[in-house]
Amino acid sequence: INNVNGPGSASLRVYLKTIETTAPIMDRVQTITADADHGQTLAGGFKLHYNGYSTPFIPHDAKAKEVKDAIEGSMNPTSLEAMDNINRSSNELRQGVGKVTVQREAIGTSGGNVWTVTYISAVGTQGNLTATNLLGGKGAT
Image: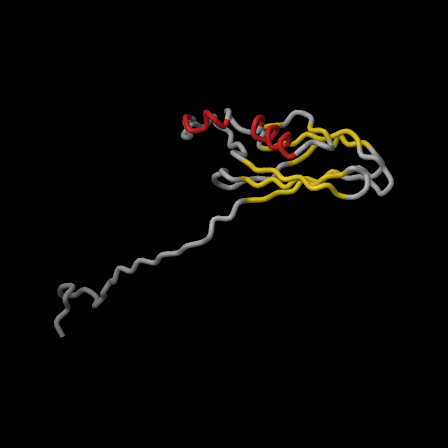
């Protein structure tokens, strides 16, 4: 048998194959809940935090647009309008949350709400928002 790889080399053939994979793009979703015990009246509000950024005080009864504006306006390295012009190679740049959508749903009898935050432009590994609870009312969380 004639070795096509030359005398003394192993008879090895290498075949190049291309594998394609696909996956659906799924937006990341996080919920924020403010509620109090049954029969109590919820008051106060909260602040949200992410990667060294913080929102201003958000009232417990804030509309979806108010929460969206607080998140986008205070948890990004610059305004959303200027994001396309950022030097992303800078080590000084902290990752922000990007653009989000927010929906609000009333819950319980205390005036509580659940806000659903969907990250629509975040790139890379996205951490969780954390909150400082400034809510009032028995059992307020």
